[in-house]
Amino acid sequence: MGGHLPLFAVPLAGLVLDVAAQLVLCRIPMGIGHVRRQFMSFAAGMAAVAIGMTVLLARRHLPGADLAGYMALHLLTYAFLGFCFFNVINANLGALRVRMLKEYLAQDPEPLADVSLNARYEVGAMLDARLARLMDGRQILLTDGRYRSQPGGVTLIAGIFRRLRRLLLRR
Image (cartoon, rainbow, N blue to C red; front, side, top):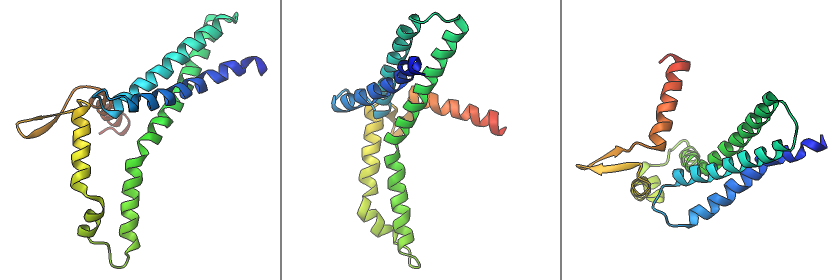
């Protein structure tokens, strides 16, 4: 078990690099969206895992299938850890929605009026800020008074999920 500990540590080191890169990238004004920054930090961690695994596996005399298996296992482990980190970062919007729903329910049997809830959270300001971030990140474009999605990461991910839904749910 002791000889495999460095291999186990490589995906964790990649995650640490992902977190550090995310912290640095968030503080650099680059004119790109937060999702692209998350992909950049994820790619840095993935590259570190690939390089670290290549270096560590080169020292071992293993058959090609074992080398490929170790590499795939550790890259997928890092991908899982990176995916979890990505979702932790993006959980803040879900937490806001849950908090708003709890406030609605807390007023039961007299629900909280939309006017008072909107006054607390200034939905217009939140929407304007979100649209500005999407435009800064070049994820949407304002043309002829309408917002249009731009080709890129988010559109690609949406297409992948659309295809998966059709494949798995037959819709």
